[in-house]
Image 1 (tube, rainbow, N blue to C red):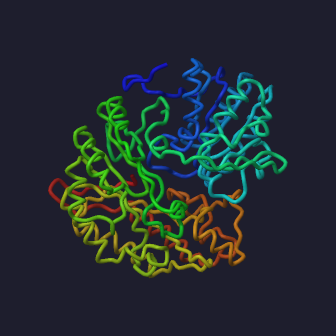
Image 2: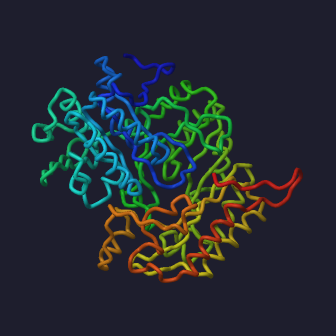
Image 3: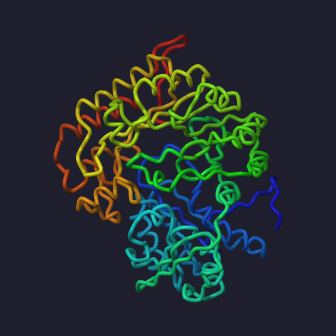
Length: 489
């Protein structure tokens, strides 16, 4: 089947006749952006395209629940119990690992036939313990360039062979990765480099509309044109350790995606929107000519006044950036030493001059790499004061996004904690009911859930909760037409 802009390659929701089921393990927090499961779609891209080329596209289905609801697990149970299912691929993040385990076990319990269960995703790449090792119901887990290993594994399993790892010629695969099976079976490979253009723009889509409150009334295309972070010093971020930013060289596939989604807004999920020569000369003109509103994530020290204006002139209406704290000392300790207070204020004023809206990430509960709590009552109030100053400056704040620092595998923070003997089992995610309303409040290890800090400062926990609630409900200064609430977008 040929896929034109009018008929792009899409995957339908799973049914009882689905043979290959792609599942995005549900995130337990309150996500503001209803996105497409990018990691899962990319990892499955080669096998999905191969099946479509053979006229077998209907064998593939997806489940991408917005939450770990009873309805989702009932739907999964019906699909598994029908008996057609042969392969389940689960993509997970650290936060969703418990849901991934539950998904795998449910399929194992109710499917009447043998189903190959494959795990992967950002969690697998970063965590030192493989899913296939830690979760009994998972047969195989893949880290690295999963799309190249997944292709022969899934095709073999669909044809009836569920014991496939030992038969694969890993020397023929592209990219680098590790496949872990049961009983300690581990196979690694290192082949020719994988092109990032394939990773970023040439992947399947799920057949549902994506929305983002930043662009009301429009579907929103979640896009990526790069991988990794060119700044790379934030202690809490797993992307800071990938050795820099790898950027798409050919932006032409974006034109077809825009044609296939008339009237949509675009949101670039790159850690930092690239400011390379290629992006300025090729990507920004495509965006400008589309006439569509779009947004992206930026790092303030990399922004010049000229580039900010160029973004706005190219149709950008929204930028998102991580400030994390109003305390310059705390920001520096978290790896954001370039974010001094005068620079932050200057860059935000430059953005305000263009009329673009801004989303600001605020991170409470900072921890040093040795496990020392850095957040204090004073730094909490500095963050609240910062939000008030931003509003007084007239910055068009679309939303403040308060969260609590979460220790993730693959980060400098995680490595530092482990070096001091403070080892965290990422397969056991604690719950912090005090922070349940925050986007990352209930999940992940932080100063209120790490065993050696638990119960250490109840007053600070209450202070963080109150401050976060306050900044979400902040209002813009009163102007003509009244005040405007800054919503949690």
